[in-house]
Structures are given as C-alpha cells and as structure tokens.
Length: 353
Image (cartoon, rainbow, N blue to C red; front, side):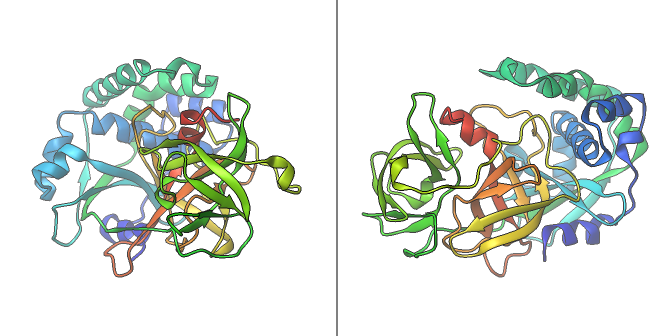
C-alpha cells in the first residue's frame, strides 16, 4: 500500500486550508505567495514543534513504539487526501511488528511554543545556519505562532508503522545516457547533476552506495572520472570529469531551498533504468526546510524508482532540484514509497554550485 493511502485509511481526509488558520499563517502566506507553498511549511512547523515536545514520547509509547523507536523517531510529514490535503506524521520503528497504529494528537500552545524554541536554538547553533535565505529566517521567526494556530485549527494525527526494508537502487551496468559505472565494483547508477565545486572542479553528483568509495575509478557514460569527495550521511559523492568530453546538457536552477516541496506539484526525474518519469512528493522530513549538518533529510514520493536509478535528480517545475534518488521500499512492504536525499544537503556538503 502506498504511504499516502495508508495515512488516509488510518486518519481520514478531513482537512482545512492551513494558510488561513490565523494571522501568523496568513503572514507566512504573504511571504511565500501561495497556499500550495504555505500549507506544507505550516505543517512542518507544527510537527517540528510537536516532535520537540517532551510529551511526544508519550504519544509513541501509547501507540506501541519500542524504546529504540521512541529514541530514533524516524518520522515524515505525509500529505494525503483530496481537496485541502492533510499533513499527518508517520513514524517508522525498526522493532515494531504489528499492524500500523494511529491516533489523533493535540498539544497545548505552550508545549508547541517550547518545542519550537528548542528546535530554533538547536538550528541556530548549527554551522552555516545564518547563511540561509530570508524566507527561512522569516519562517524561523514565525514558526512557534504558526504551529499554535495550526494546532487550534486542525486535529493532526500520528501513524506508527514497522520500518520497511530499503532496496538500494544500484544495478548491473547499463547503457542508458548519463549512467555511472564503477569499474571495480561493477555497479551502475545514474548521474544527478553536473556542477562545479568551490575549488573549481567540474563534475557530477552520484549515489555513494553505488561506488566503491573515495578515489574510485568510474566511467560517466564511458568517460573516465574520479570520485573526489564523498559523504555517508547524504549517501552522495562528487565525481570529477573532463567537461570537454561531453556535449550540451539541460540546465537546472540549483537546489530547492527555503521551502518544503509544494502541494500538488508534479516533479520529474530521469533515471538510467526508468527513463523520464513524472510523480508527486508525498512526504518529507519534518525539519525541512531547516537543514543541518549531520542530519539525513529526505523527501518521499510514490515508489517509482528502479535498480539503476540511484543518484538521479528529482526536479520541480521551476527546474530546482528537490532530491537525489536514495532507495525504494522492498516489494511486499507494508507501505511503499521511494526516498530521496534532500538536494540542498548534497550541494552544501560538497560545496557545489
């Protein structure tokens, strides 16, 4: 069952326009310019505030989470329903083996304000936090009151489910355009984007799990390349290539930053196995758009990637890069989705433009 279907089955589809929940959400709407941009951001502010509340652990205990699940809190905001969308939370627990369990939640205003203050302090203490754009800064200042208004206007819910087994999407070597082949590991994956590093190197992004590590010799569509930087948390690598060996390529506008993926919007990727595919974002890590070093931030889509697609870029309508293909759930999982590493994190960790 697709994740959005599970959430609707467990929590229903009754929803409101969160951008009109109160004066502070309306201010956020005025900054962002549309309901489709504002509602997901309001939901993220609510859930980040709730997750930082000490009482959230009690919610997970009541749902039946294991101690490890309470501690790790692998959680995603999931949009689902029809008309005005709901934005509920799913928490995956590696040690939970029962049927997915759900309950509505409500947090007092002071719990949400305190939770947001904890998150805000932690984020501001992270390296590079103050380098973010003005939209992020505005959201950071409005976050507590936005969360309170959302909590008054709508009853949210949490679903607890067993963590599905990930299926990494590297494959045996293929021949489609823009493939990456590791010469020693004999695996094939997809190019993400062509970019330039802060040191002036030109190369492509790829999935770390599809190459044998730093210094690995690879071929990018038959042209030799070298893995010059890697990062395990974002499952990413940067491969230096000779740009003169390639023809013209389509341009992108850099990573999506300062907002969550927009509601309803079609996103597109082109993988070495799947070719060009249109899909929609169904969920994301609740800390978005506030990325921090050391945090593996992801977005979720329908389970549309296949072996060989690892590392390909997910693009939204204005050609901003939303994410890079990480894994999909294994066939036969209780819930089905594909996970993508948040693109801004990859650009940041490899210092790319």
